[in-house]
Length: 637
Image (cartoon, rainbow, N blue to C red; front, side):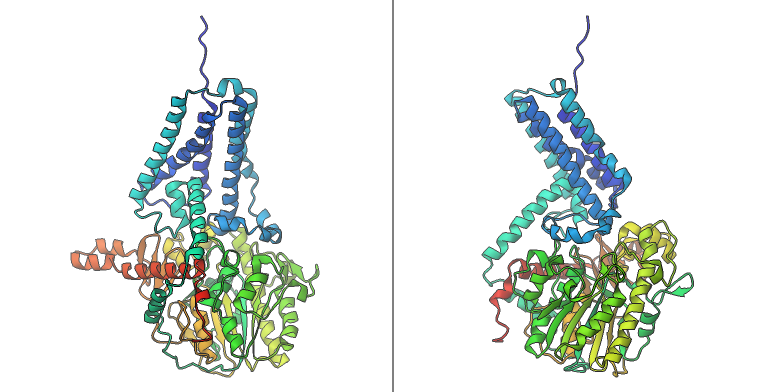
C-alpha cells in the first residue's frame, strides 16, 4: 500500500524562506549592533514573526489561484522593500522612512551614486521569490490549503500571538521603545523592518494631524524653555564686529574634520584649510559637529538658517516646505541684506525652489545660471573650481550688503574625479569610497583657495566675512574597517563614530587679527545666532536652540538627531555614557570603583543632559509639525 505524502503548505514554506533571507540581511548586510543575547534572539525571531503574519493571510482566500497569487506578489514586494532599504543603508547607514518615498524627484539626479551601491550578488536576495513563483505555478494543487473557518481564525490568532510575543520581548529589552524612538536601528532590530515601516506610517499620519490641531497654545512652554536655556540676551565681545559686511557662506560638501591638519602618504590632505587654522583673521572650531539626519545637505541648510533641529524622518525641505519660519535670510532681508543661494544643480533637487521661498531667500542661482559642459563637470555636475570662478562673477553683480551661500558638489559620494584634477593619490584600503575621498577633498581645498584669491581680485574680499562649513559626514559607518586602518585604530567604536561626526567650521574676518582655534563643543545649530551677533543684529525674541559661539554663557551640549549628545565632559550614544576625553564608558570605570556612592553619581552623569536633549528635540519637532511659527508675529515684537 502506497502512503500519500503530505506537502508543506506554501505559506509555511514562504515564511521559512523569507524569514531566513531577512535574518541573513539583518545579520550580515546591515551593520546592526547587538549588545546581548536577548537582542540576538529578538533579531532572529522577528523576521519569521513578520513573515508568518503576512503570508498566513493567504489562507483566507478560497480560490487556490488567489492564494498563490497573493503569496507570489507578497514575497516579491517584501523583497523589494528589503532591497530598497539595503541600497539606502549602504549609502546612509540608515533605513528608509515614508517621507523619503515622496522624494523620488531626487532620483534622476542620483545617477552613478545608486549604481555604486548595487552589487552583483544582490540577485541572490530574489532566490526565494523564484522558488515561491515556481511552486505556486507548478505545485499549486498540492501546496494550497483549505482550512475551515476555525482553522483560518487559528492561523490569524497564532500570528498575532507571535507578534505580541515579539513586542513583549522588545519592550523588555528596550523599555519605552515606541515613545522614545529616536533611533531607527533600535526599532528595526527589536520589531523588524516591516513592523518598523508600519510604525513609521502611523507616526507620519500622526505628524500630519499635528498641524491641523495645533493652535499656538504650545508656544509659551517652548518660549519659556528657550528663554531659560539659550541665554540670547548675553552679547559676546564680537557683537557687531562684522556689521554691514557681506556674508559669503561656503557649504563644503561632505568634508569631515579628520582630514584637517592630517596627511596621506606624507602629504597634507588640505594644505589651504590647514593654513587657515593658523590664520589670525580666522576662527577655527575643531569640535564642531554636524547635526543632520536623513536630509543630509538640505538638513544642514535647515539647521543653519533656523537654529532648529531636522526631523528624525525625511527632510523638512520636502515634508514642511510650506511652513512659516523665522529664518536667518528673512531676518537679514529685514536688515538691508540681499540674500541668495548659488548651487549648480537642478532647482527642484531637495525641493529647494519651494523651500528657499519659505526661508526668505531673494534669489536662487541654480544650474541654469552656470555654463556647464562635459569638460567642466563630473559626477554630480559642475566641478568646484569652475563653480567658484563663475560664482565670483555673479557675486560681483549682487546688491551689497549680501548674504550668499555657495554649495559645492565635487566632494560628493561616490567621489569621482578625473586624473587631470587629482593632486594627491587615492588611499589604499578595502573601501573605494574612502580611497577616492581624499583626492576630491584635496580638489575642494584647492578650489576654496582659488576662490579666496578670486574674491581678493574682485574687490569683494575686504568687505566680507567668509564662512566655510562641512555640511555632513562623507564616510558612513559602512566603511569603518577602512577608517580604522587609516586612523590607526583596532576598530571604530560607537564613541569614535560620534567623534567622526565632527566637520570643520571656519569663520574668516579679513583684517580682524584676533582669531584662533576654538575647542569648545559646538554644532550647526549655533551658526545662526553666531552670524547674527557678528553682524550686530539683535534677535533676542527668536525661538532657536543654538547659542552664539563666542559667548561664554552657553548651554554646554550639542544634540544629535538620534538622541546622542556631546558635552564638555561626556559623549552619550546608543544608551551608553562615555568620558569624552578618554572614550571609556562611564559604567566600566565605575565597576573598578569601590565607592558605591560615587558609582551611582557617575552612572547618572549623562541623565540630566539626556533628558534635556529629548525635551529640546521634542520642542523642535512641535514647532515644525505644528507649523507654530504661523502663530507668531516677529515684526510686532
